[in-house]
Figure 1 (cartoon, rainbow, N blue to C red):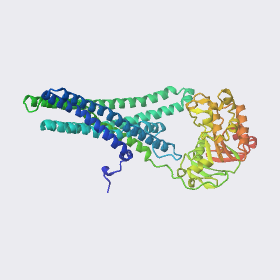
Figure 2 (cartoon, rainbow, N blue to C red):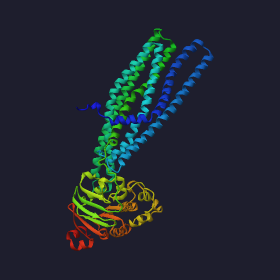
Figure 3 (tube, helix red, strand yellow):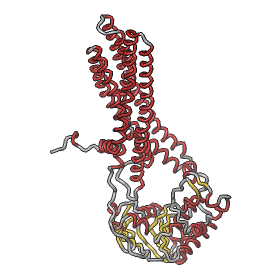
Figure 4 (cartoon, one colour):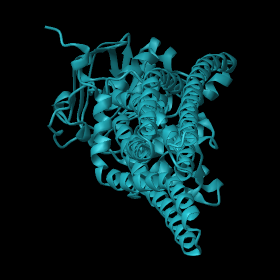
Length: 566
Protein backbone atom coordinates (compact mmCIF):
# COMPACT_ATOMS: atom_id res chain seq x y z
CA UNK A 1 0.00 0.00 0.00
CA UNK A 2 1.34 3.40 -0.93
CA UNK A 3 1.76 6.02 1.72
CA UNK A 4 -0.36 9.12 0.98
CA UNK A 5 1.55 12.33 0.41
CA UNK A 6 0.07 13.79 3.57
CA UNK A 7 1.71 11.05 5.65
CA UNK A 8 5.21 11.46 4.29
CA UNK A 9 7.76 13.00 6.66
CA UNK A 10 8.29 16.69 6.15
CA UNK A 11 11.92 17.55 7.00
CA UNK A 12 11.23 21.28 6.68
CA UNK A 13 8.45 21.08 9.28
CA UNK A 14 10.79 19.11 11.55
CA UNK A 15 13.38 21.90 11.30
CA UNK A 16 10.77 24.48 12.29
CA UNK A 17 9.64 22.33 15.23
CA UNK A 18 13.25 22.01 16.38
CA UNK A 19 13.74 25.77 16.21
CA UNK A 20 10.57 26.37 18.23
CA UNK A 21 11.39 23.68 20.81
CA UNK A 22 14.89 25.03 21.45
CA UNK A 23 13.59 28.54 22.14
CA UNK A 24 10.50 27.83 24.25
CA UNK A 25 11.74 29.92 27.18
CA UNK A 26 12.57 32.97 25.08
CA UNK A 27 9.31 32.64 23.16
CA UNK A 28 7.25 32.46 26.37
CA UNK A 29 8.98 35.55 27.76
CA UNK A 30 8.63 37.34 24.44
CA UNK A 31 4.97 36.36 24.13
CA UNK A 32 4.19 37.66 27.63
CA UNK A 33 5.97 40.97 27.01
CA UNK A 34 4.56 41.45 23.51
CA UNK A 35 1.09 40.43 24.75
CA UNK A 36 1.45 43.07 27.47
CA UNK A 37 2.47 45.58 24.82
CA UNK A 38 -0.55 44.81 22.64
CA UNK A 39 -2.92 44.82 25.64
CA UNK A 40 -1.56 48.20 26.77
CA UNK A 41 -1.88 49.62 23.26
CA UNK A 42 -5.47 48.40 23.08
CA UNK A 43 -6.13 49.78 26.57
CA UNK A 44 -5.23 53.28 25.41
CA UNK A 45 -8.50 53.99 23.49
CA UNK A 46 -10.44 52.15 26.21
CA UNK A 47 -8.91 54.47 28.80
CA UNK A 48 -9.71 57.49 26.64
CA UNK A 49 -13.34 56.44 26.45
CA UNK A 50 -13.55 55.97 30.22
CA UNK A 51 -11.85 59.34 30.79
CA UNK A 52 -14.34 61.09 28.55
CA UNK A 53 -17.21 59.29 30.27
CA UNK A 54 -16.22 60.03 33.86
CA UNK A 55 -14.65 63.47 33.34
CA UNK A 56 -17.84 64.72 31.73
CA UNK A 57 -19.80 63.44 34.74
CA UNK A 58 -17.49 64.51 37.58
CA UNK A 59 -15.87 67.58 35.97
CA UNK A 60 -13.14 67.63 38.68
CA UNK A 61 -9.38 68.20 38.59
CA UNK A 62 -8.84 65.04 40.69
CA UNK A 63 -10.50 62.84 38.05
CA UNK A 64 -8.47 64.56 35.38
CA UNK A 65 -5.21 63.91 37.32
CA UNK A 66 -6.05 60.23 37.81
CA UNK A 67 -6.82 59.99 34.10
CA UNK A 68 -3.49 61.53 33.10
CA UNK A 69 -1.67 59.23 35.51
CA UNK A 70 -3.44 56.21 34.04
CA UNK A 71 -2.42 57.23 30.53
CA UNK A 72 1.20 57.66 31.69
CA UNK A 73 1.20 54.13 33.12
CA UNK A 74 -0.22 52.75 29.87
CA UNK A 75 2.34 54.60 27.72
CA UNK A 76 5.22 53.45 29.97
CA UNK A 77 3.98 49.85 29.76
CA UNK A 78 3.76 50.09 25.96
CA UNK A 79 7.31 51.44 25.68
CA UNK A 80 9.06 49.05 28.09
CA UNK A 81 7.20 45.88 27.09
CA UNK A 82 7.98 46.47 23.40
CA UNK A 83 11.62 47.25 24.09
CA UNK A 84 12.35 44.21 26.24
CA UNK A 85 10.03 41.88 24.34
CA UNK A 86 11.72 42.53 20.99
CA UNK A 87 15.15 42.31 22.63
CA UNK A 88 14.39 38.80 23.92
CA UNK A 89 12.90 37.62 20.62
CA UNK A 90 15.58 39.10 18.37
CA UNK A 91 18.37 37.64 20.51
CA UNK A 92 16.75 34.19 20.24
CA UNK A 93 16.20 34.70 16.49
CA UNK A 94 19.83 35.68 15.89
CA UNK A 95 21.15 32.80 18.00
CA UNK A 96 18.95 30.24 16.23
CA UNK A 97 19.94 31.54 12.79
CA UNK A 98 23.59 31.15 13.82
CA UNK A 99 22.96 27.53 14.86
CA UNK A 100 21.44 26.64 11.49
CA UNK A 101 24.19 28.46 9.57
CA UNK A 102 26.81 26.44 11.43
CA UNK A 103 24.95 23.16 10.79
CA UNK A 104 24.57 23.81 7.06
CA UNK A 105 28.20 24.92 6.78
CA UNK A 106 29.33 21.82 8.69
CA UNK A 107 27.45 19.60 6.24
CA UNK A 108 29.04 21.38 3.29
CA UNK A 109 32.53 21.09 4.80
CA UNK A 110 32.37 17.43 5.83
CA UNK A 111 35.19 15.34 4.35
CA UNK A 112 32.63 12.98 2.79
CA UNK A 113 30.49 14.75 0.20
CA UNK A 114 26.71 14.52 0.52
CA UNK A 115 24.41 13.26 -2.20
CA UNK A 116 22.77 16.59 -2.99
CA UNK A 117 22.54 18.29 -6.36
CA UNK A 118 23.63 21.73 -5.18
CA UNK A 119 26.69 23.81 -5.96
CA UNK A 120 28.77 25.59 -3.34
CA UNK A 121 27.16 28.95 -4.16
CA UNK A 122 23.69 27.49 -3.55
CA UNK A 123 24.79 26.01 -0.22
CA UNK A 124 26.16 29.45 0.71
CA UNK A 125 22.75 31.03 0.06
CA UNK A 126 21.04 28.33 2.12
CA UNK A 127 23.50 28.85 4.98
CA UNK A 128 22.82 32.59 5.06
CA UNK A 129 19.44 33.78 3.74
CA UNK A 130 17.48 30.57 4.33
CA UNK A 131 18.92 30.12 7.83
CA UNK A 132 17.87 33.68 8.72
CA UNK A 133 14.36 33.29 7.29
CA UNK A 134 13.86 29.95 9.03
CA UNK A 135 14.83 31.46 12.40
CA UNK A 136 12.21 34.21 11.88
CA UNK A 137 9.61 31.65 13.02
CA UNK A 138 10.76 32.38 16.59
CA UNK A 139 9.47 35.95 16.30
CA UNK A 140 6.44 35.07 14.22
CA UNK A 141 4.71 32.88 16.82
CA UNK A 142 4.91 35.35 19.77
CA UNK A 143 3.85 38.25 17.54
CA UNK A 144 0.95 36.16 16.25
CA UNK A 145 -0.22 35.35 19.78
CA UNK A 146 0.25 38.93 21.01
CA UNK A 147 -1.77 40.23 18.05
CA UNK A 148 -4.50 37.75 18.95
CA UNK A 149 -4.44 39.16 22.50
CA UNK A 150 -5.02 42.68 21.15
CA UNK A 151 -7.93 41.54 18.98
CA UNK A 152 -9.43 39.59 21.89
CA UNK A 153 -9.14 42.57 24.30
CA UNK A 154 -10.74 44.86 21.71
CA UNK A 155 -13.54 42.39 21.02
CA UNK A 156 -14.29 41.99 24.76
CA UNK A 157 -14.25 45.75 25.37
CA UNK A 158 -16.54 46.42 22.42
CA UNK A 159 -18.85 43.57 23.48
CA UNK A 160 -19.26 45.21 26.90
CA UNK A 161 -20.40 48.36 25.13
CA UNK A 162 -22.60 46.48 22.63
CA UNK A 163 -22.48 42.78 21.71
CA UNK A 164 -22.83 43.58 18.01
CA UNK A 165 -19.56 45.51 17.97
CA UNK A 166 -17.67 42.60 19.53
CA UNK A 167 -19.16 40.07 17.11
CA UNK A 168 -18.30 42.35 14.20
CA UNK A 169 -14.62 42.34 15.21
CA UNK A 170 -14.53 38.55 15.69
CA UNK A 171 -16.33 37.71 12.45
CA UNK A 172 -14.30 40.27 10.49
CA UNK A 173 -11.00 38.95 11.84
CA UNK A 174 -11.89 35.35 10.94
CA UNK A 175 -12.93 36.40 7.42
CA UNK A 176 -9.71 38.39 6.88
CA UNK A 177 -7.48 35.53 8.04
CA UNK A 178 -9.34 33.02 5.88
CA UNK A 179 -8.75 35.10 2.76
CA UNK A 180 -5.10 35.77 3.57
CA UNK A 181 -4.35 32.15 4.47
CA UNK A 182 -5.25 31.13 0.92
CA UNK A 183 -3.08 33.90 -0.52
CA UNK A 184 -0.09 33.03 1.69
CA UNK A 185 0.25 29.60 0.05
CA UNK A 186 0.98 31.29 -3.27
CA UNK A 187 3.62 33.42 -1.54
CA UNK A 188 5.32 30.33 -0.09
CA UNK A 189 5.53 28.58 -3.47
CA UNK A 190 6.78 31.71 -5.25
CA UNK A 191 9.34 32.45 -2.55
CA UNK A 192 10.74 28.92 -2.65
CA UNK A 193 11.24 29.19 -6.41
CA UNK A 194 12.84 32.63 -6.04
CA UNK A 195 15.27 31.32 -3.42
CA UNK A 196 16.26 28.46 -5.72
CA UNK A 197 16.91 30.82 -8.66
CA UNK A 198 18.88 33.29 -6.53
CA UNK A 199 20.98 30.40 -5.22
CA UNK A 200 21.69 29.23 -8.79
CA UNK A 201 22.77 32.76 -9.68
CA UNK A 202 25.07 32.80 -6.64
CA UNK A 203 26.60 29.48 -7.68
CA UNK A 204 27.20 30.85 -11.19
CA UNK A 205 28.97 33.89 -9.73
CA UNK A 206 31.22 31.64 -7.62
CA UNK A 207 32.11 29.56 -10.68
CA UNK A 208 32.90 32.67 -12.74
CA UNK A 209 35.13 34.17 -10.05
CA UNK A 210 37.11 30.95 -9.78
CA UNK A 211 37.65 30.80 -13.56
CA UNK A 212 38.02 34.53 -14.21
CA UNK A 213 41.68 34.49 -15.25
CA UNK A 214 41.35 31.55 -17.68
CA UNK A 215 38.20 33.13 -19.15
CA UNK A 216 40.11 36.34 -19.86
CA UNK A 217 42.96 34.30 -21.26
CA UNK A 218 40.99 32.71 -24.09
CA UNK A 219 38.40 35.46 -24.50
CA UNK A 220 35.48 33.55 -22.99
CA UNK A 221 34.54 36.25 -20.49
CA UNK A 222 31.76 37.67 -22.71
CA UNK A 223 30.14 34.26 -23.17
CA UNK A 224 30.44 33.59 -19.44
CA UNK A 225 28.88 36.96 -18.65
CA UNK A 226 26.02 36.17 -21.03
CA UNK A 227 25.44 32.87 -19.23
CA UNK A 228 25.33 34.61 -15.85
CA UNK A 229 23.07 37.32 -17.24
CA UNK A 230 20.50 34.70 -18.27
CA UNK A 231 20.55 33.06 -14.85
CA UNK A 232 20.36 36.43 -13.10
CA UNK A 233 17.49 37.53 -15.35
CA UNK A 234 15.53 34.43 -14.35
CA UNK A 235 16.13 35.30 -10.69
CA UNK A 236 15.06 38.91 -11.33
CA UNK A 237 11.82 37.85 -13.03
CA UNK A 238 10.97 35.51 -10.18
CA UNK A 239 11.79 38.25 -7.65
CA UNK A 240 9.38 40.58 -9.49
CA UNK A 241 6.72 37.85 -9.37
CA UNK A 242 7.25 37.45 -5.62
CA UNK A 243 7.14 41.23 -5.12
CA UNK A 244 3.88 41.39 -7.11
CA UNK A 245 2.34 38.61 -5.01
CA UNK A 246 3.54 40.27 -1.81
CA UNK A 247 2.16 43.60 -2.97
CA UNK A 248 -1.25 42.08 -3.71
CA UNK A 249 -1.18 40.33 -0.33
CA UNK A 250 -0.23 43.52 1.57
CA UNK A 251 -2.76 45.61 -0.33
CA UNK A 252 -5.54 43.10 0.26
CA UNK A 253 -4.68 42.86 3.97
CA UNK A 254 -4.64 46.65 4.34
CA UNK A 255 -7.93 47.04 2.47
CA UNK A 256 -9.69 44.34 4.52
CA UNK A 257 -8.38 45.80 7.78
CA UNK A 258 -9.51 49.27 6.77
CA UNK A 259 -12.96 47.94 5.83
CA UNK A 260 -13.28 46.25 9.23
CA UNK A 261 -12.14 49.43 11.04
CA UNK A 262 -14.60 51.53 9.05
CA UNK A 263 -17.39 49.04 9.74
CA UNK A 264 -16.72 49.18 13.50
CA UNK A 265 -16.60 53.02 13.46
CA UNK A 266 -19.80 53.37 11.43
CA UNK A 267 -21.64 50.80 13.53
CA UNK A 268 -20.55 52.55 16.72
CA UNK A 269 -21.68 55.90 15.31
CA UNK A 270 -25.07 54.46 14.39
CA UNK A 271 -25.47 52.92 17.87
CA UNK A 272 -24.52 56.25 19.52
CA UNK A 273 -27.01 58.08 17.28
CA UNK A 274 -29.68 55.62 18.38
CA UNK A 275 -28.72 56.24 22.02
CA UNK A 276 -27.69 52.62 22.64
CA UNK A 277 -24.11 53.51 23.61
CA UNK A 278 -22.74 56.57 25.41
CA UNK A 279 -20.39 59.22 24.05
CA UNK A 280 -17.51 57.70 26.04
CA UNK A 281 -18.23 54.27 24.51
CA UNK A 282 -18.35 55.87 21.05
CA UNK A 283 -14.90 57.43 21.63
CA UNK A 284 -13.62 54.05 22.80
CA UNK A 285 -15.08 52.24 19.77
CA UNK A 286 -13.70 54.72 17.24
CA UNK A 287 -10.31 54.65 18.99
CA UNK A 288 -10.26 50.85 19.02
CA UNK A 289 -11.21 50.79 15.35
CA UNK A 290 -8.06 52.80 14.63
CA UNK A 291 -5.72 51.01 17.05
CA UNK A 292 -6.88 47.56 16.07
CA UNK A 293 -5.56 48.06 12.54
CA UNK A 294 -1.95 47.61 13.73
CA UNK A 295 -2.43 44.21 15.43
CA UNK A 296 -4.70 43.13 12.60
CA UNK A 297 -2.03 44.11 10.09
CA UNK A 298 0.60 42.21 12.07
CA UNK A 299 -1.79 39.28 12.51
CA UNK A 300 -2.55 39.16 8.80
CA UNK A 301 1.16 39.27 7.83
CA UNK A 302 2.09 36.29 9.99
CA UNK A 303 0.83 33.57 7.58
CA UNK A 304 3.11 35.02 4.90
CA UNK A 305 6.16 34.82 7.15
CA UNK A 306 5.23 31.30 8.21
CA UNK A 307 5.16 30.19 4.56
CA UNK A 308 8.50 31.90 3.86
CA UNK A 309 10.05 30.22 6.92
CA UNK A 310 8.70 26.85 5.79
CA UNK A 311 10.07 27.33 2.26
CA UNK A 312 13.50 28.21 3.67
CA UNK A 313 13.39 25.24 6.06
CA UNK A 314 12.61 22.91 3.15
CA UNK A 315 15.68 24.20 1.30
CA UNK A 316 17.86 23.72 4.37
CA UNK A 317 16.53 20.18 4.64
CA UNK A 318 17.96 19.45 1.16
CA UNK A 319 21.43 19.78 2.71
CA UNK A 320 20.81 18.59 6.27
CA UNK A 321 18.96 15.38 5.36
CA UNK A 322 21.15 14.41 2.38
CA UNK A 323 23.00 11.16 2.93
CA UNK A 324 26.80 10.87 2.52
CA UNK A 325 27.85 9.43 -0.84
CA UNK A 326 29.88 6.82 1.06
CA UNK A 327 30.05 5.35 4.54
CA UNK A 328 33.63 5.47 5.89
CA UNK A 329 35.04 2.52 7.78
CA UNK A 330 36.35 2.56 11.37
CA UNK A 331 39.96 1.42 10.79
CA UNK A 332 43.26 3.33 10.72
CA UNK A 333 46.29 2.85 8.42
CA UNK A 334 49.23 0.85 9.69
CA UNK A 335 52.39 2.87 10.52
CA UNK A 336 54.46 3.50 7.43
CA UNK A 337 53.78 5.31 4.20
CA UNK A 338 53.05 2.64 1.61
CA UNK A 339 50.51 3.54 -1.06
CA UNK A 340 49.06 0.88 -3.36
CA UNK A 341 46.72 1.27 -6.34
CA UNK A 342 45.43 -2.07 -7.61
CA UNK A 343 43.43 -2.33 -10.84
CA UNK A 344 41.56 0.96 -10.46
CA UNK A 345 39.02 1.73 -13.19
CA UNK A 346 37.42 5.16 -13.04
CA UNK A 347 36.96 7.73 -15.80
CA UNK A 348 40.13 7.65 -17.89
CA UNK A 349 41.73 5.04 -15.63
CA UNK A 350 41.49 1.56 -17.16
CA UNK A 351 43.00 -0.70 -14.52
CA UNK A 352 45.92 1.34 -13.17
CA UNK A 353 48.17 -0.66 -10.85
CA UNK A 354 51.28 0.51 -8.99
CA UNK A 355 52.87 0.66 -5.53
CA UNK A 356 54.78 3.46 -3.84
CA UNK A 357 56.81 2.02 -0.97
CA UNK A 358 57.40 3.80 2.32
CA UNK A 359 59.85 6.72 2.00
CA UNK A 360 59.96 6.58 -1.82
CA UNK A 361 59.70 9.58 -4.15
CA UNK A 362 57.76 8.48 -7.26
CA UNK A 363 56.60 10.54 -10.22
CA UNK A 364 53.80 9.61 -12.63
CA UNK A 365 53.98 10.97 -16.18
CA UNK A 366 50.39 10.86 -17.43
CA UNK A 367 50.14 11.21 -21.21
CA UNK A 368 46.45 12.11 -20.87
CA UNK A 369 45.83 14.92 -18.31
CA UNK A 370 42.35 13.56 -17.60
CA UNK A 371 43.84 10.31 -16.28
CA UNK A 372 46.02 12.26 -13.81
CA UNK A 373 43.00 14.25 -12.62
CA UNK A 374 40.93 11.08 -12.15
CA UNK A 375 43.75 9.41 -10.20
CA UNK A 376 44.11 12.46 -7.94
CA UNK A 377 40.33 12.45 -7.30
CA UNK A 378 40.39 8.75 -6.34
CA UNK A 379 43.35 9.20 -3.97
CA UNK A 380 41.76 12.28 -2.39
CA UNK A 381 38.57 10.24 -1.71
CA UNK A 382 36.61 12.73 -3.77
CA UNK A 383 35.26 9.62 -5.49
CA UNK A 384 33.57 7.11 -3.21
CA UNK A 385 35.37 3.71 -3.12
CA UNK A 386 32.21 1.94 -4.30
CA UNK A 387 32.06 4.22 -7.37
CA UNK A 388 35.12 2.69 -9.04
CA UNK A 389 36.55 -0.76 -9.68
CA UNK A 390 39.75 -1.87 -8.00
CA UNK A 391 41.31 -1.11 -4.63
CA UNK A 392 43.39 1.67 -3.11
CA UNK A 393 45.40 0.76 -0.01
CA UNK A 394 46.98 3.24 2.39
CA UNK A 395 49.32 1.87 5.03
CA UNK A 396 48.36 -1.67 4.05
CA UNK A 397 44.60 -1.20 4.51
CA UNK A 398 41.89 -0.66 1.91
CA UNK A 399 40.77 2.95 1.81
CA UNK A 400 37.10 1.87 2.00
CA UNK A 401 37.77 0.41 5.46
CA UNK A 402 39.42 3.56 6.82
CA UNK A 403 37.81 6.51 8.53
CA UNK A 404 38.01 9.71 6.51
CA UNK A 405 39.77 11.46 9.39
CA UNK A 406 42.55 8.87 9.45
CA UNK A 407 42.93 9.06 5.66
CA UNK A 408 43.26 12.84 5.84
CA UNK A 409 45.87 12.59 8.63
CA UNK A 410 47.91 9.96 6.74
CA UNK A 411 47.45 10.96 3.09
CA UNK A 412 47.37 14.51 1.68
CA UNK A 413 46.48 15.17 -1.95
CA UNK A 414 47.32 18.70 -3.06
CA UNK A 415 45.30 19.61 -6.20
CA UNK A 416 46.71 21.70 -9.01
CA UNK A 417 44.07 24.38 -8.32
CA UNK A 418 44.43 24.61 -4.54
CA UNK A 419 42.31 27.37 -3.01
CA UNK A 420 43.93 30.48 -1.51
CA UNK A 421 42.03 32.08 1.34
CA UNK A 422 41.73 35.64 2.59
CA UNK A 423 44.18 36.14 5.46
CA UNK A 424 47.98 36.22 5.46
CA UNK A 425 50.76 34.17 3.92
CA UNK A 426 51.26 32.54 7.32
CA UNK A 427 47.62 31.54 7.83
CA UNK A 428 47.47 30.12 4.30
CA UNK A 429 50.60 28.02 4.84
CA UNK A 430 49.78 26.96 8.39
CA UNK A 431 46.00 27.19 8.99
CA UNK A 432 46.21 25.22 12.24
CA UNK A 433 48.82 27.58 13.71
CA UNK A 434 51.33 24.91 14.72
CA UNK A 435 54.20 26.73 13.00
CA UNK A 436 56.48 23.69 13.05
CA UNK A 437 57.64 23.49 9.42
CA UNK A 438 56.71 26.86 7.93
CA UNK A 439 60.25 28.08 7.25
CA UNK A 440 61.32 24.82 5.59
CA UNK A 441 58.13 24.73 3.48
CA UNK A 442 58.63 28.35 2.36
CA UNK A 443 62.20 27.63 1.28
CA UNK A 444 61.35 24.35 -0.48
CA UNK A 445 58.50 25.93 -2.46
CA UNK A 446 60.64 28.94 -3.44
CA UNK A 447 58.15 31.28 -1.81
CA UNK A 448 61.01 33.17 -0.18
CA UNK A 449 60.98 35.94 -2.80
CA UNK A 450 57.28 36.65 -2.08
CA UNK A 451 57.97 36.82 1.66
CA UNK A 452 61.01 39.05 1.16
CA UNK A 453 59.14 41.33 -1.25
CA UNK A 454 56.82 42.66 1.46
CA UNK A 455 57.70 44.45 4.67
CA UNK A 456 55.20 42.33 6.62
CA UNK A 457 56.88 39.09 5.53
CA UNK A 458 54.74 36.07 6.35
CA UNK A 459 52.12 38.41 7.80
CA UNK A 460 51.52 40.00 4.38
CA UNK A 461 47.75 40.24 3.82
CA UNK A 462 46.28 37.99 1.12
CA UNK A 463 42.97 38.85 -0.53
CA UNK A 464 40.20 36.35 -1.16
CA UNK A 465 41.30 33.65 -3.66
CA UNK A 466 44.77 35.22 -3.72
CA UNK A 467 43.63 38.11 -5.92
CA UNK A 468 46.79 40.11 -5.11
CA UNK A 469 49.14 37.27 -6.09
CA UNK A 470 50.24 36.09 -9.53
CA UNK A 471 49.40 32.60 -10.77
CA UNK A 472 52.90 31.32 -9.98
CA UNK A 473 52.84 32.84 -6.50
CA UNK A 474 49.49 31.24 -5.74
CA UNK A 475 50.77 27.87 -6.92
CA UNK A 476 53.90 28.11 -4.78
CA UNK A 477 51.82 29.19 -1.77
CA UNK A 478 49.60 26.14 -2.23
CA UNK A 479 52.69 23.92 -2.47
CA UNK A 480 54.15 25.46 0.69
CA UNK A 481 50.93 24.67 2.54
CA UNK A 482 51.07 21.02 1.37
CA UNK A 483 54.72 20.67 2.41
CA UNK A 484 54.14 22.35 5.78
CA UNK A 485 51.48 19.75 6.60
CA UNK A 486 54.28 17.14 6.65
CA UNK A 487 51.90 14.29 5.78
CA UNK A 488 53.18 10.73 5.88
CA UNK A 489 52.03 10.30 2.25
CA UNK A 490 51.95 13.39 0.03
CA UNK A 491 50.44 13.45 -3.48
CA UNK A 492 51.16 16.54 -5.60
CA UNK A 493 49.23 17.16 -8.81
CA UNK A 494 51.05 19.44 -11.27
CA UNK A 495 52.63 21.64 -8.57
CA UNK A 496 54.86 23.72 -10.89
CA UNK A 497 52.89 24.42 -14.07
CA UNK A 498 52.81 28.20 -13.44
CA UNK A 499 56.49 28.78 -12.58
CA UNK A 500 59.51 29.34 -14.82
CA UNK A 501 62.02 26.57 -15.65
CA UNK A 502 64.75 27.78 -13.28
CA UNK A 503 62.36 28.04 -10.31
CA UNK A 504 60.89 24.67 -11.25
CA UNK A 505 64.36 23.08 -11.12
CA UNK A 506 65.01 24.51 -7.67
CA UNK A 507 61.59 23.43 -6.38
CA UNK A 508 62.14 19.87 -7.62
CA UNK A 509 65.43 19.56 -5.75
CA UNK A 510 64.05 21.20 -2.61
CA UNK A 511 60.95 18.99 -2.48
CA UNK A 512 63.03 15.83 -2.94
CA UNK A 513 65.34 16.94 -0.13
CA UNK A 514 62.59 18.03 2.26
CA UNK A 515 60.53 14.87 1.69
CA UNK A 516 63.46 12.47 2.04
CA UNK A 517 62.31 9.49 4.10
CA UNK A 518 58.61 10.38 3.55
CA UNK A 519 56.41 8.88 0.84
CA UNK A 520 55.80 11.28 -2.06
CA UNK A 521 53.89 10.82 -5.32
CA UNK A 522 53.94 13.57 -7.96
CA UNK A 523 51.60 13.61 -10.98
CA UNK A 524 53.50 15.78 -13.43
CA UNK A 525 55.02 16.25 -16.87
CA UNK A 526 57.80 18.50 -15.50
CA UNK A 527 61.25 17.17 -16.50
CA UNK A 528 62.74 18.66 -13.33
CA UNK A 529 60.35 16.80 -11.01
CA UNK A 530 60.57 13.61 -13.08
CA UNK A 531 64.37 13.73 -12.85
CA UNK A 532 64.28 14.29 -9.08
CA UNK A 533 62.09 11.20 -8.52
CA UNK A 534 63.51 7.83 -7.50
CA UNK A 535 61.55 6.30 -10.37
CA UNK A 536 58.98 7.34 -12.96
CA UNK A 537 55.77 5.52 -13.87
CA UNK A 538 54.24 6.15 -17.31
CA UNK A 539 50.44 6.34 -17.28
CA UNK A 540 49.11 5.90 -20.83
CA UNK A 541 45.53 5.14 -21.82
CA UNK A 542 44.62 4.60 -18.18
CA UNK A 543 47.26 1.96 -17.33
CA UNK A 544 50.92 1.94 -16.24
CA UNK A 545 52.90 1.06 -19.37
CA UNK A 546 56.49 1.72 -18.32
CA UNK A 547 58.65 2.15 -15.20
CA UNK A 548 62.23 3.37 -14.84
CA UNK A 549 64.27 6.43 -13.99
CA UNK A 550 63.60 9.62 -15.93
CA UNK A 551 66.96 9.51 -17.72
CA UNK A 552 66.64 5.86 -18.72
CA UNK A 553 63.16 6.50 -20.11
CA UNK A 554 64.44 9.50 -22.06
CA UNK A 555 67.18 7.36 -23.56
CA UNK A 556 65.07 4.33 -24.43
CA UNK A 557 61.44 5.44 -24.87
CA UNK A 558 60.74 7.75 -27.81
CA UNK A 559 57.10 8.34 -26.86
CA UNK A 560 58.14 9.36 -23.35
CA UNK A 561 60.78 11.68 -24.77
CA UNK A 562 58.20 13.43 -26.97
CA UNK A 563 55.75 13.74 -24.08
CA UNK A 564 58.01 15.27 -21.45
CA UNK A 565 61.01 16.86 -23.18
CA UNK A 566 60.83 20.67 -23.31
